[in-house]
Length: 338
Image (tube, rainbow, N blue to C red; front, top):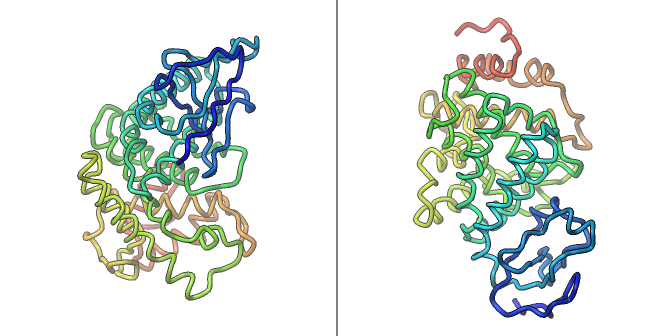
């Protein structure tokens, strides 16, 4: 990518080269909207001199440092981005602010991460375990708060991924007794967060088509679990947080206990508890949050009564796991034996 012509903002001090670090779209929430540049590839590029914080108060007072677009330094600056991200979460949670602002920025971060993973990059992916750890320590068993607040923009794969993570974490804390410092819980969170990474390989017109998919479009859509597995598998050598559990959730979150799912037609105990809980959370969130022209959003009770309970009765989900999922959300399972 050609480096954009430097664009000073603020007092116009001329910078030295190679000492500027980027702030991407994820961090724009911190600052006033004019402080960014839209690059030729559609990327938001906002860079600042290393060691200078873009403090909101400085911005409001008009005392901003010079900002320059330099796309070549982004990867080196990601650790600093993550540090500022964690600082933001710590500030917001200590203030007792509504979680919607935190969720908005997390969704942006996850969206960029998934997009980059589709291109074979892991720089942002490497930040996810640390961010998950901060979220677990700050919100713990109150992770459901994330799924109850939707950012004020169109429902997206990133928002859905964060919601799915919230439901999965909630399940394993409340039903399996995992603690927030348990490495298994962090793995569960990461598996849920990345379960739909394969959708990066699917035409977005299909992903967000308002009408029902044609048979050919549905055939393409059903390739996303395998595409997700392939993406994660190719990145596994670069990032050891991509465990077998994370791979399995991406590949098998559309399997059904009766063998009617895809892509491998697994049955019964071939489907792990984690992967099946990701599947339940995936369906629950899609139906309660995502509205299409051919169907309205459902309430939680409607999803249970009209979709998940009937499917469990005919063997598509394990009864115990379904009941535990319902219980984890504070509802009472309906007449199913364990």
